Image (cartoon, rainbow, N blue to C red; front, side, top):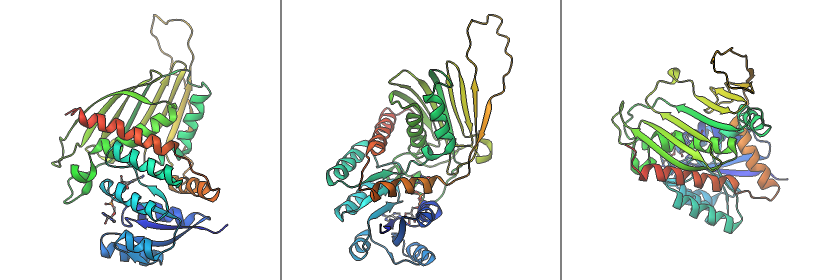
Length: 339
Ligand SMILES: NC(=O)c1ccc[n+]([C@@H]2O[C@H](COP(=O)([O-])OP(=O)(O)OC[C@H]3O[C@@H](n4cnc5c(N)ncnc54)[C@H](O)[C@@H]3O)[C@@H](O)[C@H]2O)c1
């Protein structure tokens, strides 16, 4: 089979750091062109990878034959650029969050379904081996009925002049829109459940930008799991454990250092079913089983999945639909103004 030819829109950020290297590692893929609105970024990245470069997506897609388009631009660009790529008949891998709001996301997914083209959204954390392990343990009853979950995800993000993430009109929100979406998506994946009710508080305390630099989300899933998500731009990277905690009626799963861009960290699993009520409340500590991140590449795994679908002439919209549900939750949070 001939290789999947990729064009990239928004070549400078995560595209250059993670996705283009993942495309180049993939045996089924080849990079054929890059585009960035900023001329010197387009040129630098194009020359780095030895491919033609452009400053408009239309010119690139007119001149270059490709099968798939990766979009790694600020959130506000996702909808229009994905629609443009679709109008050129391409499959699309768009970065998270899918779009500025759920309505735009839903319209996008609908358009791809109608055209029979694949739409994948860059939620790569479910590819972490320890998150797959957690899902497997939960499914097999290894912590019993999951009752309480928590995700803590942070990224130190100080005031930076003209940073799109720090402007509501470009990023759509702050820590919740940028980091919270990963946690919502991952928890729904692990629990195989959907968040039904949500409340949140957020504020801007440490920095002076207009979006929130911290947020707390409290939720209940359809099956009744209770959870909360803490996301912060205002905690130093070294001061955060980046923790995912899943507590059930028979034990726990605690992941440390697994929320992020690398397949690192640990998963501790404790199976500790209990019969009688312990009125004394004396607790003997038990040792959990500990597993390690396998230090693979989350982005390569996600590109591989995308390529497998295309190579087999298939489409799968399950996670694109879920990416829209994630935005519904975020819309609800921002519409309720939990400031
Ligand atoms: N999945 C992940 O691990 C991950 C990590 C970081 C960012 N992201 C997502 O990737 C997207 C980009 O984030 P980033 O951190 O790379 O941002 P960035 O600002 O570092 O990079 C974005 C690039 O897009 C270019 N650009 C801006 N507007 C453009 C336009 N209209 N057309 C073409 N190019 C344009 C910029 O010049 C820049 O080179 C966001 O949606 C973000 O949420 C995902």
